[in-house]
Structures are given as C-alpha cells and as structure tokens.
Image 1: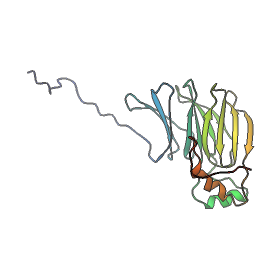
Image 2 (image 1 turned 120 degrees about the vertical axis):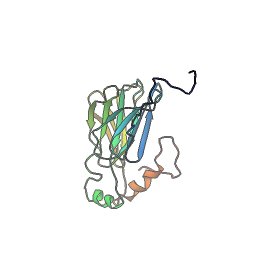
Image 3 (image 1 turned 90 degrees about the horizontal axis):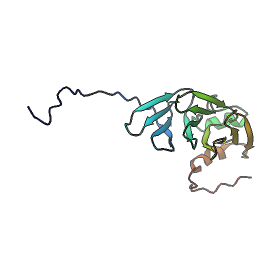
Image 4 (image 1 turned 30 degrees about the horizontal axis):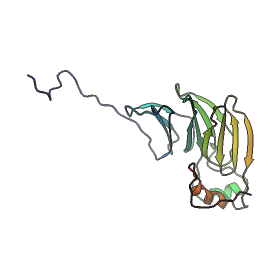
Length: 193
C-alpha cells in the first residue's frame, strides 16, 4: 500500500506547552536569535526555543511581576526586573515612606544555560521598569521610579545610584511610566531636575 497519507508506524506526538498564566510584560532575544526570554505578571520567566516554539526552561524566583528583561552580549546571562503597582493608592503609601509592590522590587541575574539565579540586586523602592547590560557585560543598569542604578555584574555590588526627584505626592512617578520608552519614543517631554 503506497498511500502517501499513511504514516505507518509514525505516531503523532502530543506536546503540552505551558506558557505564561498571566500577561507577558517583557521579551528579549538571544544575540544568536536561537531563543527568546519572556517575563510576565505570573512572576516567572520562560526561555523559548525559537526553532521549535518549545519552552526550554522556566525561571522561578521573583515574587511580583517581571517587567523588564535584558540579555548579555555573549548570551550567557539574563537580567530581569520586577515589581507591582496595583493602583494609584500605592503611591500614597510610597509618599509616606512605605515600599509598594510587595517586597520584590529587585533585579535578578540568571545563568541562561542552567536557569540558575546567580544574583539578587536590591536597591529600588519602586518597581523596576528597565534593565540593560553594558556592551562588555561587566555592568548592568536598572531603572525604576525612584532611581537609576549601576551594578557590577560579577559581584552584584551597586556602583552608583542616582535618585530621581519628584514632588511630594509621587503622582509624577505614575504619570511618567507610560511615556518611558527603551526606543527613545514617547509623547511626553520629561524634565529631570
């Protein structure tokens, strides 16, 4: 029987993909375009094989939204930034000296190959909205509504922190978030004093 639709002994495989259970907030491609990292409101990071669409690994450690991802130039490290802002009422807590978004306004550095968390960088009081590796991979910058921080990747040491200046209400922090863009866009002019 030479029926081309006959698969013979080849049986179909059922592959159950477990993607994010809530919205995806950030993505980053590997330098060689073989994999993609995604971070979401489910507090996890997933590494995806781009040729198959399969999840290679899931990284657990954050306890709030993963908002930002960056891959080192050599593709060996992944940085992630997290934190939640539930609503504008959180800013009242912050204005009174409290920490919003739970306690995980952190930056984490991961080994992509093993999925192991290498460092947890603490220094932001507000959710981390952006992370970027330097070209040589030795330092990492993170940004949140309260500061821009520069970190040494090898040790996790904070090299520099520039606090941002806002009025006492803190509403400018929330209002400036939608205009933040890694691509230089945005429709609002923001003046930093």
